[in-house]
Amino acid sequence: MNERFVVVSLLAIIAVAIALSFFAHEKREYAYIENVDLKLKSVNDSSADITFFIKVNKVDLSGANLSISVYDKYTGILLKRKILKLPDDACELNTTISFEKDRDYRVLFKIEKNGKTISSTGLTLRNLKTLIPKDRELKVFLRDVDFEIKSVEKDSVKVLTRFYIDSLKNYSVRFHIKAVQFESNVLASEKWLDLNITSGKTTIVESTLDVPKNYNYLVKLEAWRSSYLVKSWSRCLNLAPTKKIPKNISEEEVKFEVEKFVKPEVRATPTPVEYAKYTRAVPGFELIICIFALGGALIWRLKRL
Image 1 (cartoon, rainbow, N blue to C red):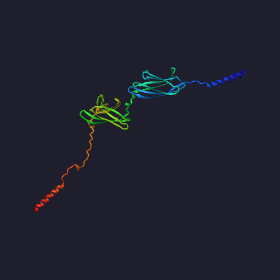
Image 2 (cartoon, rainbow, N blue to C red):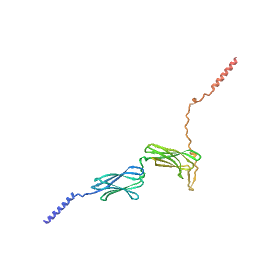
Image 3 (cartoon, rainbow, N blue to C red):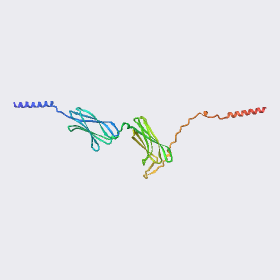
Image 4 (cartoon, rainbow, N blue to C red):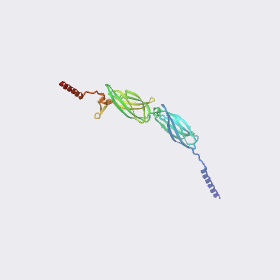
């Protein structure tokens, strides 16, 4: 009897334990940062405003916050911190933070509750100084450069410079073309041009520069927008070249006769005109025959008289 009672009691305890395992509910709390995206909202000369989109996945977690900490990348100094309250369900939060463009940053994202970090992730922001305002944007590309000798004086040379530019958009650009003496970096000649660049075709930016003879130059083309130097290209113009002698590993001067590169001016071909329209009648054989005929008739008449 006692044994039967013990067995029944054990079975009852097991049944209760099984039942409790089905109906008991253990509350689970967890959260993690699934993804962080960022987008440039605005930019000016000194700073950039960046919007962060933070996707958070969480279950049964209430009373938690999302903290965003911004550090100087190289010194590790905390520069600013922002705290956002997390809603009860999974969500995507967005917030905008302003960054100075003169440094790089480390941005750390943390989900925190009661001073305990539940999830964290981070990212690095670099080269913010390369971000420029819309009015200074210039999506153009240099295709080719030509130099043409126009004339040679006693101590100077006139050189026509041509830069061939392709553009993805239409822009109004102020160009600065200048020739800098290669070894000394002395400005020898310059011109400023205001041009409208059209997308879908190659624009020729050209100007004639007057530079001293027998020197080498670096010819530069600078593109300016809103009083700001946006892009610059350069090519060498050697009017006093040298060449290396491999055997002696030395240099000798090359006699560069710049006069031989002067292209003659092309003049318009005269339009042919009708000969009869602009020429006078010249006496021919008809008049001579007529004179002889009259003379012969006059002589014959005198003989009959």
